[in-house]
Amino acid sequence: MPLHYLMFDLGEAGDGVATLEAMASTPRDQHAAVMAEVQQILDWAWRHFPHSHGPADDGNDWDHDLQVAMEDGGWCAVNLSLTGSLHFVAEFLAAFGEPHD
Image (cartoon, rainbow, N blue to C red; front, top):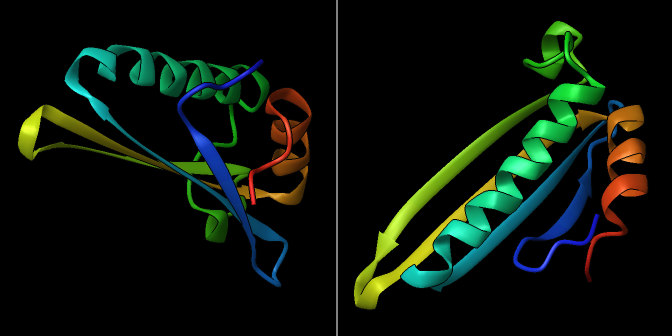
């Protein structure tokens, strides 16, 4: 599933939990396309890990944080952070590809 706007960075914690973070800043007329990618990712996560959403500290496979901000000049910034078990992250990478450097 190719992504055109969101480019993820992978950060790993030593306790079996990793983070995937993406940010996109686009003109307002491209904001709907960015949000469609966010929805595609969240839909995938809910389909593949439907009963394990929530804090990793509670034993869940994944959690997310979505921030959307309107910036000066008509730009929109979207930040999506996923925290997941190593199993979740491996499945994510298989579906969406390797993170960017």
